[in-house]
Length: 348
Ligand SMILES: C[S@@+](CC[C@H](N)C(=O)[O-])C[C@H]1O[C@@H](n2cnc3c(N)ncnc32)[C@H](O)[C@@H]1O
Image 1 (cartoon, rainbow, N blue to C red):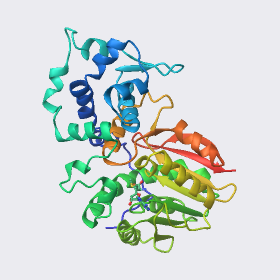
Image 2: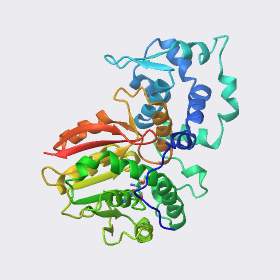
Image 3: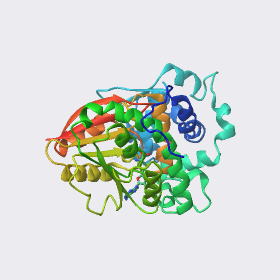
Image 4: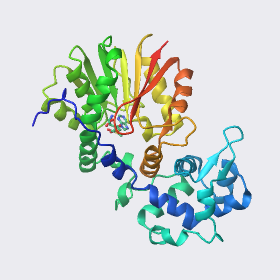
């Protein structure tokens, strides 16, 4: 059935997405409390920096950053902005330190050995994404996306989320899109963001760049919306193949959070290479606050991402630093819908 993509919802589905997006956070906390006894150790030290925690528990940098972000956002740890030393808050001191009369470790015992908690511990120690929802074949999300059945189900997941979000994104960037003629939607999934953008801004043309087998799903969806004249879908590897040009606006929607810093730099460099001076880059994501003390829903979502992908949630400040290195003048980060936002940058 064809959807009117120019029609926005009247409500924000944030609560519904948060239930799903926070699914791994409780188990990650259970590991910190029940397996590592992290808070008792920090209490005994008084204050510690990240490298001391990594060395004591043998934890990898990417997942440890996600865990500490969750602890800050949950009001359990405070990090001094000058020294980057971590200390417990009174909440953690009272309830998460062995010897306290109010110690809550037994409360987490039922989930400390759950499949998700075991995955969290593996990721913390080995920096390897566990499998997607304990899939039997042990594939991580990136490998699973090559499988036709998994790719269909996950693309459906992103597509249903993207319909409302794409409409709001298209409105949020409307002043900027007025001067854009061709959008390149890299890792565009079902093409829903190109579709909503074109539906709202009929002067616009778009290209969705996707890998197999998602490219076929994108073609089907674009056809279902009757937008084949305005949107084409090309099959390419975003890291290896040339990005199509000319384009005056690149969209990276929910793509960078799948990757670690080397891949993020590579994708931003490729965007910089393909854009003319004055061209735009739109990063549509869940952004952490610059000091990584929240927001809690984004810190919780980051736990899910670190478990299933090679990425996590980043702050706008982290993206800003890379964007400036690759010749972008970075604009504001504007909220869109459901804890998401868009960071805009203009090629100098
Ligand atoms: C998290 S999804 C985001 C989809 C869509 N942009 C959205 O916001 O819903 C990431 C997408 O990147 C695609 N992708 C991953 N690696 C890729 C590669 N090497 N080349 C092209 N696309 C890739 C995946 O197939 C997937 O559709």
